Image (tube, rainbow, N blue to C red; front, side, top):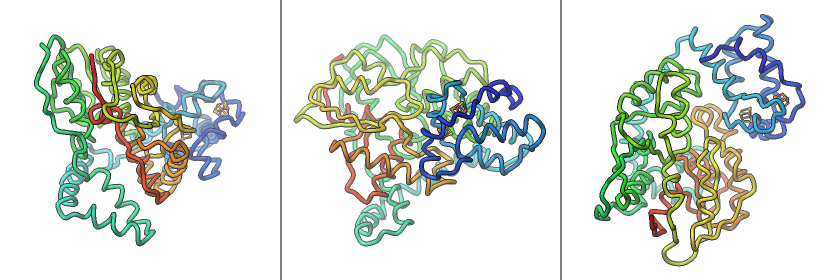
Length: 394
Ligand code: SF4
Ligand code: SF4
């Protein structure tokens, strides 16, 4: 990974015009100038010149960022703030050890969450907390309610189709840690749909793509994860598919950190449906969508073409939902306020279903509706929606 000094020229390009301030979701909520790229670049300039040191305080400012890259999109100098802040964090952690960088710890938390959710559902805590939600506005309860969206039973029908086509292509399915540990709704949907194609799905035992480690600056552990995952990909597979926009983004960036030849074979599961005829089965449904910051699949165009689905575009549909890994925990109040504003935009559409293609964004949108206290529309991964409500002709 590059060092801060490698970005000296890039940072120098900042004219302090302030356009990044107008689009930064964190600034919009906090009105704190330190959350804006240009101010962070001022700090980094100070470090490059030797006036400041890269310390914990500076790191906290770098962490006060969702990595949404809205600022890059609007920046006249096209400065990639996300890349710079990530590199600065990685530089800091090269010199300062933290126990939080350990993947072992991360996996332990995921496994605990997995079994915790099973117990939660078994004890019917989801029903109890839903009941209590009408009686109290407790902040703690709101946080617990988010677990209900993960603890509910798989909403997608179990696989029942027979294998109908001869398999002529091979795809490795990278299901990501949400499917593996927390809620496998979209995994079931992917398998349902691909049973009827000529593509054979292979499922090696992948670990997390590493997005949380990468964006936190835990480069060493991220590289270990990338190497583990890459070793499991057979050379002869035609595609590496994923149903998560963030996994796709990170897998495509592996070659920046380790030698890999997978970039051209990584596709969103939705890319493979682009030429299919998709029709809502029963009555027409009104849908809207949230485009994750990492999405490159262009899925909005796909859902606009679904027959019998009425798409209504939400204001700010392509702006961050506020639920970005560590940020959602460390800056929970800001994260929840950003999500709430998103939920308000969705409400205005009147749509009963919100589609996206990232499980963290599903949580972000649900978090927003919990904050609003409204009865929420269904929030589904596009692939879940297709498996649940549509017929697909390839
Ligand atoms: S938009 Fe770009 S050039 Fe303008 S202040 Fe922000 S980072 Fe600097
Ligand atoms: S990446 Fe997003 S959250 Fe971070 S500074 Fe830029 S606009 Fe703000």
